[in-house]
Length: 147
Image (cartoon, rainbow, N blue to C red; front, side, top):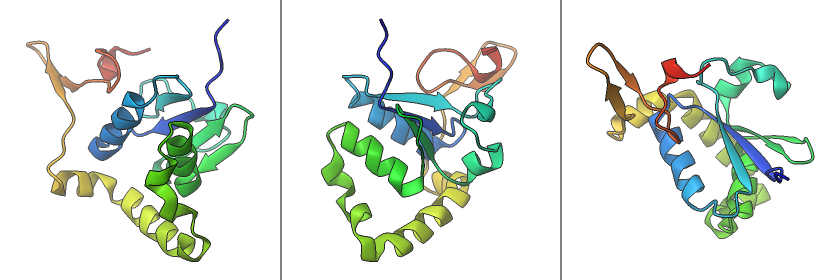
């Protein structure tokens, strides 16, 4: 019997910063409490989450095992806490800081590709002799190969 993850994170697999953070979280995910879904994957359907694709591009989304949809800072707090790293995101829990941190997070999310580039981050590239494609962050499959 397969156990349901406590949280499923919906991340942008075309964002180098997002992929780096998802990989980091996955390294801490020994108990498999968190699942990862790449919203850039061919065939991804946002309707299973009950949101529009535009909303997924605006900020990080997650869905708890109980079906609750979390966004932005709440999603990060849940993921880090489930992975035993809640202490790393303690400032996100401070009510007086929440409006400022939410505003900063949304600004970051809106400009994540540009910020990733400025930080010198890129996605891994795979070439087959005819074309090059970015690799999926958690498998060897290429985006174009997935159904």
